[in-house]
Length: 514
Image (cartoon, rainbow, N blue to C red; front, side, top):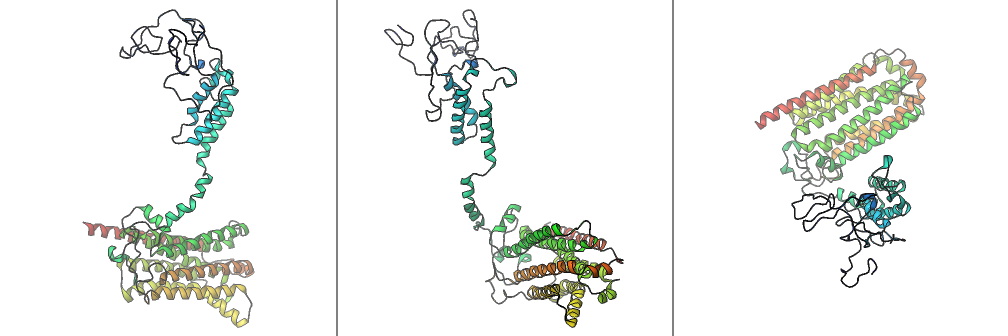
């Protein structure tokens, strides 16, 4: 009776892929008898027993390139993923007997061996299906490579070049968002902006240091992670508008600086350095202010430290404004009066403004004493800084000059006066106590008008830089002072003052805890 055809006394047919006992291969010995090389006996405690019979010629039975089926191996691909073999090899005769060995086609074996390489990522069903199709194609194209063991540098690898390219593409695709992921972005942003549980608390749940006049809610709890406070940028609380007004303005000025870099030679033109410094100073105070309002709720120490940093930014901006006005906007008559003292006095008053604000915050000076220590140095610094602009506006008015830069200078003065009024008055929240915890605070309006002042100022300075070169080149040909040195001196003195007071705050808080 033909091999593989069950007859009288023959065992029932075995399913496809299950080995015949007569077929050579590393199958375990179930009854402790002789087994093939490398096949442990199941009743002998895992011992290897010697192979019975002489070794036949040709490749060793069960070698990997023979692609024989193995129990417990990878499952066969489904018909949808790996198509049926077009040709099946003739049944090979066993070496010990004359029976046929049922088995899978070589193309199916290759697909089964290559499939796990593509489906290595857990849960990657799409990758598994694509890998099955690529594996079946690779096996169809290179089935001859399975007849003998591979040689050379590619030994031990069954992936052909197209299959390897597919695998690399599958790996790289994980680093880029898919269309489905991009479609989920609005939902994720909405969840990020939605209020978190306990993201804000009432005024009674935070120390008195954090209280704002007439604001009774919208405070962020203390001692959370830094991630919590950075993510509060997208939450509703009583500092959110203060953060966004200066953060957006800083981004606008960064774009403005990029535009200047395309038209102004900051490196080669020595008269362009004051323009660069005023833009840099403006970005500095805006970013320091945004950081202070965003992160000050971390703890009492960080509340002091970040507002000290805010006052450093204000001092830098004050000197930058004084320098730009002195260099570009000043009239020759006023320059002759103040040239010897203007920059040293501007640097000193900028530092004094920073020191007064930091000391007021450190001592928590109430009422009139606090306003004197904080607002008087700032007022003196602004009076000196704006004096070239005021003189310029007066001369243009008397002479009837039509100068577009003068209009922007007028706007910057008006916006600053409005900002100062809202900063000092704590209005309109005093008229609506408990109603302005998100919008409508006087400090928010102070931020808005200060940003408008800065934008108008930079526009006026840019126009003066372009239109008044013949004037300021003659005035500053032999400058009595190095303005870059005074700018650096202002920054260093202000930073040292803030660091000194931060150290004092840390020491006092440590003593309080002990």
